[in-house]
Length: 334
Ligand code: KG4
Ligand code: ZN
Image (tube, rainbow, N blue to C red; front, side, top):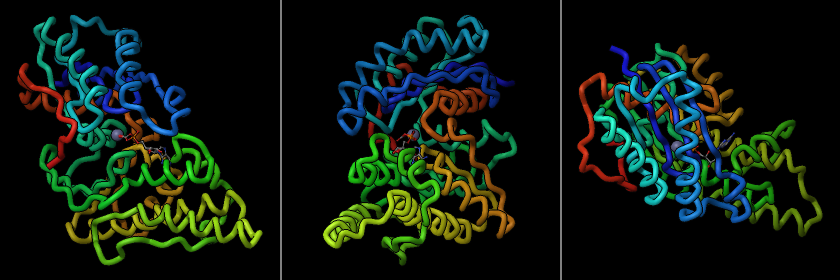
């Protein structure tokens, strides 16, 4: 039976709350803290936790009102348990657990990355394992072999910066603002992705990423170009940086598909909102006859629906979380 679940995501800088019935999204609201953090050029953990505390009650009321649901109708409440910022996680997790306790309904703690794995299914119910899923966010760049729901093998991760982190740091270097991913995506419009050949790291590793070297090579390139009074256009720089990141993401996703023998690719995490990455994956999947499931951008970036959706699934399976459970900032998918 489809379960009616309220879900909370507060692992980083969005206070996100949603209501789902099974994999149908009834409401999905979000209070972003981007303006609060942008003057610091990144997320400040203490500021994030306080902002979650201030926003969580009104966001909950909005999610319930948008869904037309009374709290008494809920079958369960889910919240992100980890990974993420400990103070930020604690706000959503404690609020959700206490509310579930008070209403005597089950509570389900969800791995944030598993939430991202559920997002393609909320968009398209046909999405199901076995699949290879590229999870690219501000904190992670993982290729996951989804054998079944709940059965995940992380084939590869980044050995240094995550893809989103690379976008954010490069955008800061270029003075494009925060968060950097959307800024580079936008600035790349009309630029030539082949204008500058930035390096593609770790060509010999089939499923692993490295993005920290790119920052150094972009900085060196820009310093030399400035000294030679030969600066390329902003659009060309943005498009070339983006291409260097997208190239390796696409190539290693295809390696993972080949190595696991699946014919389905999924995508999730904030970087999956990138227009170029989406287009390149669509092109690659079409060429090879692979099925591709990338949710709309607002389901790629952090949202409450992915947590509520994963919670509804586990509740339907009869798997709930003990009242003594706590947040786990270092939680790992496998
Ligand atoms: O999944 P997410 O919303 O939060 C985390 O769990 O980290 O991902 C946030 C990351 C940020 O680094 C942001 O710059 C990046 O996703 N991002 C993008 C785009 N939109 C968000 N990166 C590239 N292109 C985009 N359009
Ligand atoms: Zn995320």
